[in-house]
Amino acid sequence: MTKKQSLILGLIFFLAPLVYGQSKGFEYYEVLKAGNSKSTNGSCIIKIENNADSYIDYYVVLTPINKYSNLFVTDKTKTNFTVKSSDSKGNFEFDYIIYAKKEKPIPSIKKNR
Image (tube, rainbow, N blue to C red; front, top):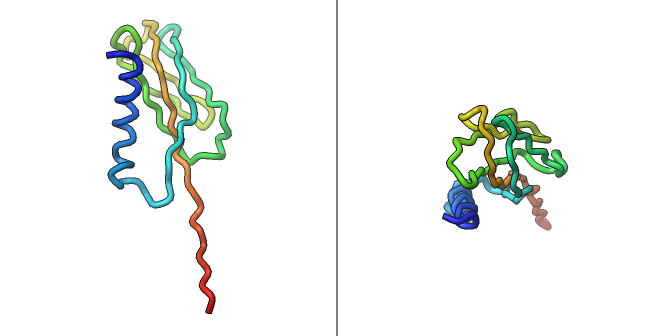
């Protein structure tokens, strides 16, 4: 499977609940950041440069590159998160996409009486 195919599959599985109406009324998702990174000694910190006040929460999709790595996210904050592998001493390379969960304001409707 190519890198592009892996990213597309990750996107499809992540967005499927939204397409089928399981999201709440005025919440929506936006790609906050996407990229590639490498770990050293089994972990890697990814910084989020965007304005943390502009979103409610975020979700991360990880895709290992070149070899299988049991990747997972730890220490998730509004400004960064850490990616680790179950092989704590191994180095690994991965792609990531960060989706921000945002909320649109509810429009007010005024009736003339």
